[in-house]
Amino acid sequence: MKTTNNNTRFSSKPARLAILVALMLVTLVAVAIPAAAAEGKAKPEITLAKLKGAWQATVYGEGGCGEGSKLVTFTLNSGGVATDAVWSYHTTGCGDATITGQTFEITTLNSDGSGTATLTIGGGVTLSFSIQVSGSGQVFNLVDITDSGNYEEGTAVKQ
Image 1 (tube, rainbow, N blue to C red):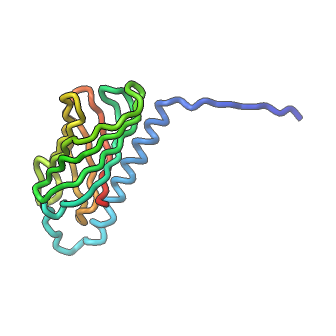
Image 2: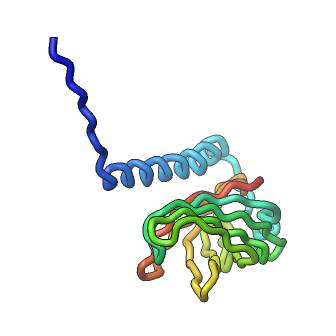
Image 3: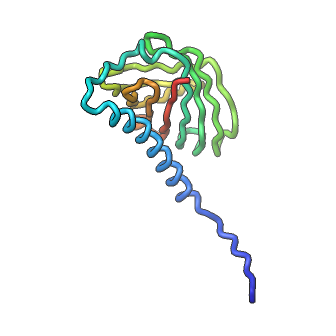
């Protein structure tokens, strides 16, 4: 019997697609399960004050430093602003680094949890995100669909 060693290298395009699909599924589950449980009940209004506290967001995408994964931690005040954001990244173009003292701000928030947010990441770069906060106020997704050259998306979880 002949034995062969089949080493197949996976293309990065399917791997990227798999990661994006996984992130979308996590976001869908995080938003859909609380919504399904609350079906038929009046939904409480989501406010900036209810989002106050420590958060951690994972972000994946491609931007000025190429493709990579990022982590941002921040503590929102009752006005939706954090001036203590820490942006850590692992990217193809810039390698690994951490930038402290950044600002994460929820710039608009509707009572249904939809809104916008911005994140400064040093060097005059600001990412603009569309966000959707879950009904529980414990999770929100974020996606950059407006900044040319930045294709970032992720999920934030209240700590």
